[in-house]
Amino acid sequence: MAKDDLIKRMMEKLNERQRDIVYLFYFEQWRQQDIADHFGVSQQSVSDMIRRVLKILSEYVHQERNN
Image (tube, rainbow, N blue to C red; front, side, top):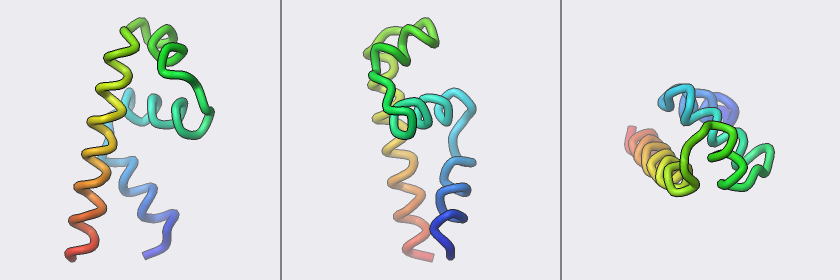
């Protein structure tokens, strides 16, 4: 499986807001507070979302390795 295919399939596991937050945080290097301000939520909400997303993606990678 190509790396790009894996990333695409992983991102499909996320909802739109989760994808947006991941993109802004990891690819655009936005600070959590800037993301929070952009979406009108608390910084803690963004932090919690990032933690949940990492858990979702980690579980997906683990499943893929076992298949």
